[in-house]
Amino acid sequence: MQVLAESGLAEIAAVADASCDALEQARACAPQARPARDLAGLLAMDDLDGLVIATPSGAHAGQAIAALESGLAVFCQKPLTRTAAEARQVLDAAQRADRLLDVDFSYRYVAGVAQLREAVRTGELGELYAIDLVFHNAYGPDKDWFYDIARSGGGCVMDLGIHLVDLALWIAGAPAPGTVDAQLYAAGRPLQAPVDRVEDYASVQWRLDGGASVRMACSWRLPAGCDAVIGASFYGTGGGAALRNVGGSFYDFNVERFDGTSSTPVASPPDAWGGRALVDWTRRLAAGGRYDPAAGHLLDVARLVDAVYGR
Image (cartoon, rainbow, N blue to C red):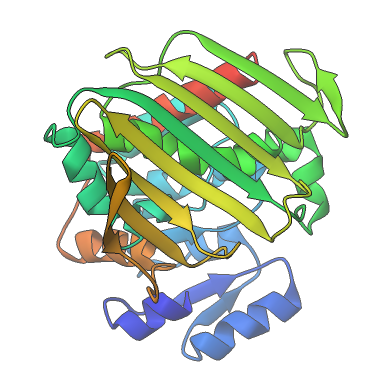
């Protein structure tokens, strides 16, 4: 919200939060914003253009649909919903209302990722045959609802892996596949699908329509020797490219191109990428943006995550 306030693209007209402390912190960033008790209080205001949703995942579908049906554009924290069925309902509501809908898949906006996507899409890497994805977090979430599958929809895949799923499908330009091989674990013990509790480690493999093999691993509390291990690597018959975090950081990334044993830097820190997805949505909204059929990609992501969980 602070990034949006500093962008000058929009006025933060109102805020609502279940936590009084959080509400006051928000208003410190936007002193002019009117406080509301809840979503209903926001939707009762008649001068809003869009709503940013940053609540527990289980609330996203109902809140997004309510906002869209009230005529507001929606920017939602990931995941859009817990299941593909819920995602379909939200997308239908956005299409009926003809309102802009997007999700905070923020890693798309790291410097150099757009060039990486262009290299894949234009065939600069040759025929794509392998994608390796990893997101290990040495810590677990600090809020109880993450560990309640009814409220979260899943564990580390829903929390972290969904970013990787989005990157793979967005960069490679392929829809979600029909067959997914997923191994999920909780405290070192394998879970059976359909899972009924959150996982803290996942190993997943699938194939894209073009034949490329995708491997993904993600976790909470993995003893990785650093705060985080994050990467998305793409390999083709003509070269490779990758996004990789630097020194275990959650925020610093290098993007590189590979040719055999040599590498060429594309982008490196410092890079203030954290709020770019929200700013981009706001810019499109300010320009009169309505429902964008590209939002259908969100359903592809949700379907693949459903397949991981055996739903």
